[in-house]
Image 1: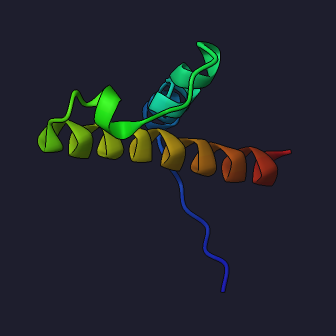
Image 2: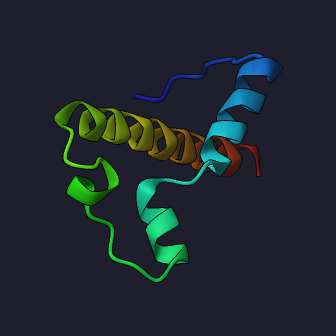
Image 3: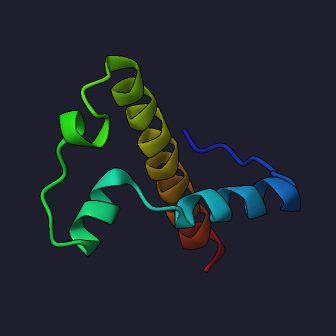
Length: 73
């Protein structure tokens, strides 16, 4: 079942900004390295969790923008 939603220009702008951020994997690939959570978080479980949350937000924003752009094209 399809639903139509309306989002504000401010939210769309924020999603686009977030989608353009780099995940830990993006940064590692740019440096020609393999992404490893223990190294990126310096072995701190809370930092690892925070990295995962931040990367998840970026990936969700990218998915949402892709769907929005597909519908609007």
